[in-house]
Structures are given as C-alpha cells and as structure tokens.
Image (cartoon, rainbow, N blue to C red):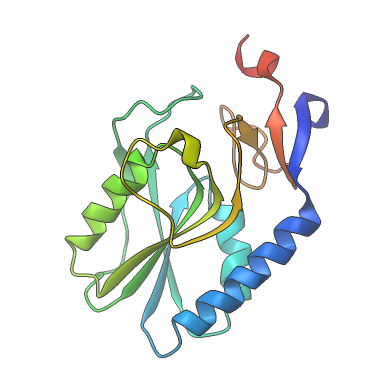
Length: 179
C-alpha cells in the first residue's frame, strides 16, 4: 500500500491535531444546540470517528451513503442514495461530516435534500477542501486542510475501495489509477 503513495500530504500527527482543534471549535459553536452529526459514508467514517470523539458536547450521529464516483477518479455528477438517514431531522442542527469537498456537486445535492427535511440549521465539516475543483456554489463551514488538485487516498479516502486504512493522507501514484 505504502509503495503506491507518491507523497504524503497530511501526516497522522497533523490529522490528529487538526481534528481535535476542529472538535473544540464545533463544541463551542454548537453549545446549547441540538447537534446531529451526519457522516457521509464510506469516505468520512475515519474522520467522523475521530471528530465525534473530539466533540465535547452532547451530539447524536447518523449515517448516509451516497455514490457519485463508481470506480473512477472523477465524479459522474449523478448522486445515488445507497443508505438514507434513520433519524427524522426536524429540530436538529445538522453538521454534515464529509471526507473531501471537491466539485461540491454531491454535497450540494445532500445539503438541499436535508434542508427540505426540516432541519433547524445545516452546516458542512470536511476533512479536505479542494477549491480548485469546485463546480457547485458550495463551501465548507469547517475544514481541516486545503489541498491541491491531486488524487488523494488514506484516512478513509479510497481508490476503488482500497487505501481507506492508510493512516495519513497521501497522493496516489498516477500509474495506480491509470492502469
């Protein structure tokens, strides 16, 4: 796995430090609110696990799974809900937890979908922000790292379901995904 990584963009230590700081900020911002953290599976599962432990106020969690990539490296633009939320969103201050904000098309779709379900408020927290690829008019309310336009894996992010368990965020060697 490590041999397929061209370079490390974010180390394990940097991830831990930023995620803990973000958890503290979210705890301050949502104090006294009805926080529901919604993880967008599968990519955000590692970030969500660490972030929810860094949040020090009462919070509920739920999960949804969507697909817009298939096995490629670019979004298809078509969002398919694979697993929907279990909770009724009325009265919740929803924080969508995502691994990467890239084109923004998927997150724009999810945000509009969840707003229509009666949320009290809705914001986005993403581990990685890649603004150079943005196609939709959406931005993260919280993010840990601004990254360049490179194909990254690790810490939950994958290529064709592999590399999610790589403990840092690394740039995948192009020869791996252009075979």
